[in-house]
Length: 247
Length: 252
Image 1 (cartoon, rainbow over the protein chains, first blue to last red):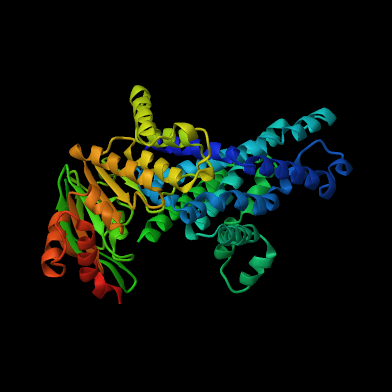
Image 2: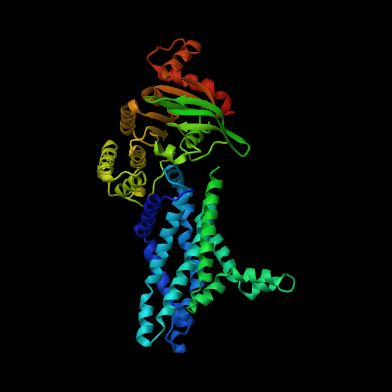
């Protein structure tokens, strides 16, 4: 299947502006900013640590995304299905891949905007001390990549169902599993009987394992590749689901 | 030219469309008639490329809808059943979005938008969100979307459903004006519509074509067979009769 960049661009622009046609964008950005500040300052003890870095801020991102990203992704396809617009979209001269990519990229760009709007925190640490800004930029990049992986999962779950509520719940569950994979809770189920290579593979699939190094500013090619692979695999699954459900 | 060769579609154990074959040439306005659930919409969805047929092939302007879907889709304007559109967009932006997807640029885009907006009398609602419009306006927006790129083939699923008598008249006038250089396929269960706009009527029941002729001819047959008292120029009661006779079996 070929990618037609112009068709993808048209879909991207429509989808991106659609966020701002309803209060959705403003509500989302506001909640994201408020929650990330609450987590950083109260739960994370930003001041008590007396360190000029944003580790506490980034450490909460996986948990923040767990509930906020599915709220964005749930409508991507479920809404098109329930409103019947999917029929219009399918009969326009564009491929499903164009539509999937256009929608995904618009949602990802929107997440990026919300992340960028946390810049006052970055100004704050620079005012209070002398943080390593390279680490912070790497962590921002890693956080955005992780948001993309969550979104790609959400995109696929949204294609599975007509109901946005079901899409939301499915996405939270699947994302939660991918976070948990690095925890003893899941790993203990396998230790003792499974070969260690399997254990490593399961731990290696976890969002958290990869994000922990990124949030410390270690931006390895390995982690970046992991997130991009997640995105590609889940978007391919979305195209597949859309094709199968057409019959 | 549309050539449909032995297409079938099954949903689970239900056969929605059962080995239908026909062809339509330029200038024809073909009316699909049939009870609800007869397979009219499913047939249209297959022609537009929304559903792939289980068996058989469909060629639209020489392009196979499965093998070269994009080329086929470029030649088609489609009004889906229920006229779904992006409710959160204003009319102007929505039509502009469709024009962009259809690769209409600059002057061409402006002319296409102007003509579709004038044809559908949408000037007053251009800057309103589609979801706030009345049913009639929603359908006109969806129709404007379908005729925007001046397609060779127009597939209109119940184009006058939900319109008031004046609007129905306008849409029928529009279809009549469009039809000289196009193929138009409409589905309806309003029989007067067939007499009013179609040059050919096809009655579909239980996924099969049970009659395919001109509306006048269908009426004439019915007049001779069942209603000898009917006069030739009033075809509506006659069409009603032929519709009931041919589709009665499939309703049970």
